[in-house]
Image 1 (tube, rainbow, N blue to C red):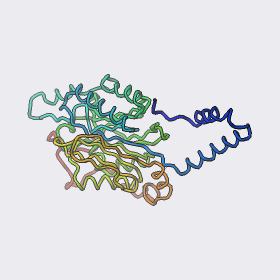
Image 2 (tube, rainbow, N blue to C red):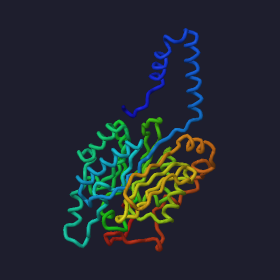
Image 3 (cartoon, rainbow, N blue to C red):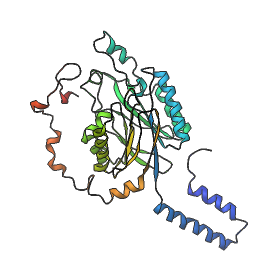
Image 4 (spheres, one colour):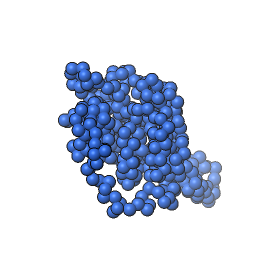
Length: 341
């Protein structure tokens, strides 16, 4: 049976057929009125839940085919467990495999693994999302000009693209991401789920370590933020992620690589900063249940988020100049220039 929810019209039709020959017309009318009354009561008090499956998978290095096959297996398992959204770790298509800058032509070989958004390995997950009635966030090294990007494409449960987001804060302190094209904006989109639409945004790994990323997504209306990751998640980074949820009154969900590549600890927090799930180091699927009703109710009353901000006082935040103490050399041995990235 398809996982898509029946509409109230469908339920009412079934209800009417059941009682058509058992109730006089007046009684039938009362039954129908009670149906709507109970429905309204339930709607007012029931939770609106979205389940996010964090796919903490171990890759087959940069074997794109093997990684896509494994991701499909994990997506199918996530759908069986009732997931509304399945999220992969950062740049899953190549297992976040780095190149050695000291090896001749290594950078050029790395670029050959880049995939266009409309390629079969990516679009197969659009078809899979439609088949499973489950949104899928697929991460990959995206073919792009002049250089590839670190990208997340979110397909909804009908296989329709919600957005493609490229990592804005590329990790330019490392040769690999210093050799890529950074994204130039953040995205939030309306994701259709069985519980109704939810505003979903995305940030990737080092993006979440910059408070501006989550703040912009909050200002765009994001209620839930998906975060593919590929680094060690220590206590401070987990607390940092928790604060992103609390200060912006949003749910946040992060999928990381298991040991030995990273240390797992895929995690999710609700808008109150409550931990919904925390994985260990092992490979697996970790499910986070977000109560959207609670998030929306909190947003209507909180002092955080965009309730009492003073953006007209924040001019310094958009200045690119750096004091000498903050100036750095990038992963390619060149002076890091923010305005060029």
